[in-house]
Length: 433
Image 1 (cartoon, helix red, strand yellow):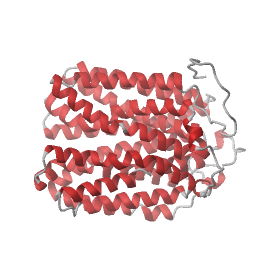
Image 2 (cartoon, rainbow, N blue to C red):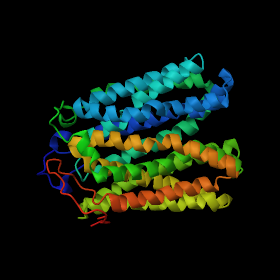
Image 3 (cartoon, helix red, strand yellow):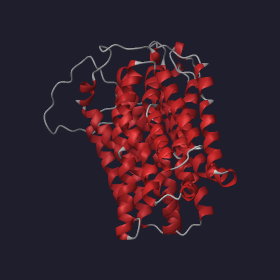
Image 4 (tube, helix red, strand yellow):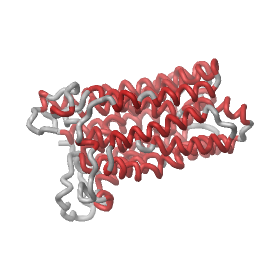
């Protein structure tokens, strides 16, 4: 990227060679994130049909639903390393080819074991999505474009969840789950053709030596990394609570029918998708008006986590209509938080470390994919309601505010060539200027 181009002249449509990222690259990354969440959520949508066909026990079904995270969580660290050392564009393509094939082959599964293996393979493939994407965006996207680019990435994530919940479920009822899995997997692979035909800058896909960028040990010594890891876990806990328990909450706790539940769940994700795009656009507008990147990023993060804490609390104690409004708010603030969090990683890690930074951070975040469903299930079983489960998620959102407000001092590019001087213990500061 050429630093000489003024921020006011940068445009998302500009090609990478002129100091920006092309809209086609951003669009393809957003589509990849859409595919990512459609494919990973496909089994949850098909769970009733799969369980009946294979005569699965509740324990076996639970193992299948969690198997994705067995490989996805530990796969984040090697995925980040690969995206830094190799061609990030090709690393992403290989990952998508693996997860697309795993989704298609799941439509041919003969039983529990084969489906279990394919879910683990799906997690391996999908583990490269965000480390590789963040490497590409960190290298090619200017500061003035970053809000919109990441807003569209968040849009793909939540739109994929909405599409999989609503359209995927309806298609499975009409066509059967096997046909939908085969079609989804094959459609995913079609993404590879336009991806390799899209011109991209050399910055994100050149190989690196061991001397390029900070070591992993250097990353692990940064308090900003650990602050963002804690905050990311807290935000992901709320997301996975909604993703895994929203249908049952609406049906059992709020009395909606199955037919009513599907569009309500899809609407929550759709609101998150729109909020991600709007947050990105507003962030770039605010930057263009002269605000510092630190103020813009921190404000978006704190608004997102603060709104989540409030809406999750309202879900715990509100009545029928109030719970719907609170869920709508959860969708809005999940999108706000996601777009801002993506910006945070790319700003702090920069070209040299964004992929590995995201690898470490996403490892911590997706532990919530294991803990949130489990803790919620235990709490609901023991208390007979969702109140305490939502309170726990709200409390974690408050911890997310503290992590980004005090542990991460400033959200700005880190100079990896300079060793940070020691600071006195307990020197925490909240800065948004």
